[in-house]
Amino acid sequence: MPTIELNADQQAMLAGAQGRARQMGMRLLLDLAATAGAAELIPIDSAHLSGVSPLTGGLGLRQFLARLAQDPQARVAVPTTLNAAGCDAAQFDAMRITAPDFRAHSLEIVALYEQLGVRPTQSCTPYEWDGVRCSGTAAWAESNAIAFGNSYCGLQTNRESGLSALAAALTGYTPRYGLLLPEARRPNLEVIVTTPLDDPTDFSILGDWIGRQRRPGWRMPLGPIPLLRGLPPELTHEQKKALTAAAANYGCALLYVAGLGEAPEPAFQDVLT
Image: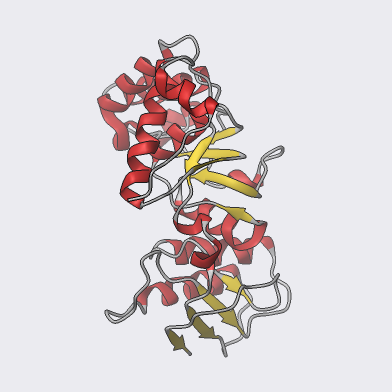
C-alpha cells in the first residue's frame, strides 16, 4: 500500500491547526486514499455536494453538519455548489409533503451548508450556473453532474459520495486515483450508432440502452467508458445532458463522442451496435 507524504498544509489540517472540521475531512480523505491505493492528495478546483434531503441524510446529517458548523474555522476551501434539496420551500404546500417538520429540516440542512460557505444552488446541474467552473480537477457528487463534466467540459472527477465531496471541499484536496489518472480515462467500450437521433429523449434512450448492455465478462472497475460513433457532428446542450444523465444511471461516469473533442487511445473490451 502506498505511503502518502503530506505537504505542510495537509499536515497542519491533520494536526487540527486549521480547525476540527478540516481535521475530520483530512482524516476521511486519508482513509479513502488508503482504501483506493492512492499515493497522494492533490488540490481541487471545485466541489459539488449531494446529500441535501432529510430523506437521504435524516437526523444524522443534520447533527453532523451542525457539529461541523460549531467550528469557527469551518469553511470550504474551494468554490462548492449544492445538489437539489428535499423540497422547494417556496412551493412547499403545492408539493403536498406530509412528513412532519420536513420543510423545517430541509431549510436547516441548506442553512448549515451555507454556514460552511457552500453556494446554495440546490441543483443537480451545477454546470448550468453562472460562475461555476466545469473544468479542472474536482470532487463532485451527483451522477449526472459528474458524467456531464467529465464527458464535455474537461472536468476530472471521480464519482464522489456526499461525504467524500464534503471532505474534499473543506480541505481543498482529494486522493489521486480512479478517473483522476489518465490511464483510467481510456474508452473501454465502442458503441456504433446507426439510428438517427434528434429529440433529447432519443439520446436519453441511447444512454439508458448502453447502460443496460453491461455483461458479466467485462472488466470495467470504473464502469463503462464508451466511445460513441455515428452521432451528429454537433449536439445541443439538452442532447448532451440527456445522454450522460441516462448513461450515468448505470455507472457511466465518462463517455466520449466521436467528433466532439479528442479521446485517448482506446482499450476496447467490446463493441455495441
